[in-house]
Length: 575
Image 1 (tube, helix red, strand yellow):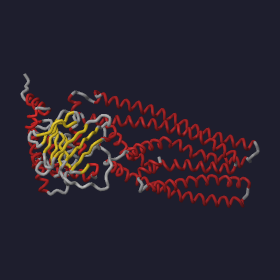
Image 2 (tube, one colour; image 1 turned 60 degrees about the vertical axis):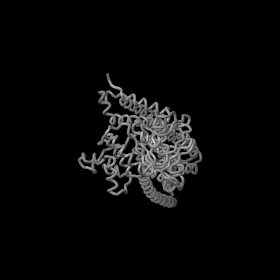
Image 3 (cartoon, one colour; image 1 turned 180 degrees about the horizontal axis):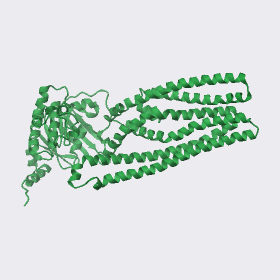
Image 4 (cartoon, helix red, strand yellow; image 1 turned 135 degrees about the vertical axis):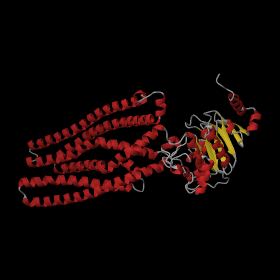
């Protein structure tokens, strides 16, 4: 846990944890010393040695005051550490997430990350505020008391020391029981949460087929699994905590019996035995707290470990300085081999050159690797073999901000933020002038959308752009690309689901983009690429043909077969 906390705080702030633990450890030692000093005070009172009692009381008072001061400092340090953790965790997490390859963000990891970044963050903050101090004190104080018992009577000290492994085993059993249950709870909660979100997002489909909540089996199964998991976890937690509590009581009983045996043996007086047994209770008290906090500590530790697992994920390596761009707008893939699973390549010895200022179209069957080409150019992943170059520089030799400055991307599935229409377009280039903004919106056909919206440019589009249709969202995405005026524009099947009107706007926008940018697009509708400077046919992860529409038709190869199949399909009708 200490290692994970230091990682979470970062190298520049890890000393906060070290100082906090040191003050907490000092308080635990002082509290144990204070408890040990009660023994001579009790003995002095019983024997009537008033001269010695003054010295012992004064020493006890000094240690008690010192413990109070240390406790105050330790509490303030803990509060400061909790606040620092709360304020820096999301920042560190966000900074690290942007360095991870996009392949890391699958549905399962995203669901778990969401839970850790919300509930988990508060639980981790509670480690400093409520859990770490009792844990350290509950170890330091009994250790100090054990040493004191050895000082007063080695036999009672030995009995105390022998009970420690038994107690440690019991506490470990209890904590492990709670941790296993919490891990199952976490997985069940993530699954149930994912299904609830899915149920809300897919209402149109579910209602279209007459499915209500009682007819959506995946959600019902997830809720039922969550209920069964929690019942099982509760039972295991009760068993574990009962075992640890019983172990503490047995240890106290054993120490009491050892004290009675020493009295009956005549080794110590009854008064001393009573004082030592009282000290033994001070040994067991903090350990009982460990038993009580064991579950919460392990649960918080699991959340902490899940968060630090994200921070330990290897990010994409970046150079300290970017290489120079010798040919802005040039795209090159040189004998690239890549697979999302290394043993299953999607691209095999793939080579492609897109000259600056040209329009190149990638066509081919689904799953052939066209989208992967776009992703590698954007450096969503790194190749296993070969090189991808943008502007004459290997993408691995460019810093992320320098690479993204060269690219504007338009995807088929457009995501708009829950902000105004204008803000979503200005995301492409926030510093653009109003005239540039209006021109980009006009070319993409967004001005026609604005005329129909109640608040014009200030209309909020909702989360994901739900207030707009799919074609309208695509126009906004195109306007972003136009406004950015990047040297390279990548369009991934941007026309696949557009109606004729929106497709017309998109084609006009592509012509405008081609005037100042290199355009690389993926298209399933071959009619949209006949005017491209270069058409590349991708099959089974390889570029099998390249040329203009006329030259590829004349070659009578893969592209010609695709074109003739499309042409014959236009004449189909329902009889």
